[in-house]
Length: 125
Image 1 (tube, one colour):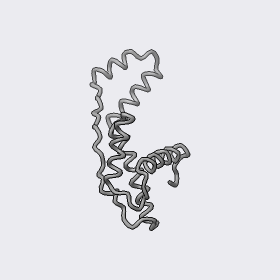
Image 2 (tube, helix red, strand yellow):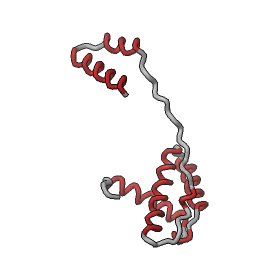
Image 3 (cartoon, one colour):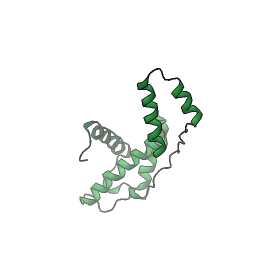
Image 4 (cartoon, helix red, strand yellow):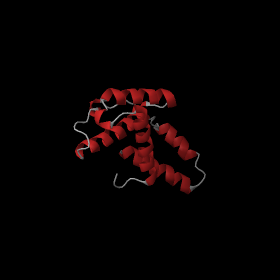
């Protein structure tokens, strides 16, 4: 929680409140199936992608870990839920021809410099 913005903390609280209200049972007896059902229902309800659901899973897991470390609960049953696979996006690369077209269409030295710096940085990484 240290170093998180107020917006991030508010989002964490929102997700945890939803989880706690939906599960509607004492956190000491929450099991992984409770969390799985919540995540599945939530994904269907708001039609979000796997990355969003995995972030919520991670928030729930961190909170339950905290409860275990602070000895509010005996054992974290939620840690059995594995990371949710996310679709890997393959970024399109620019050919030398495309870069040359960008350079030719620059109207001034500033734009040309920006393209050259951008392209030289992309080749290094």
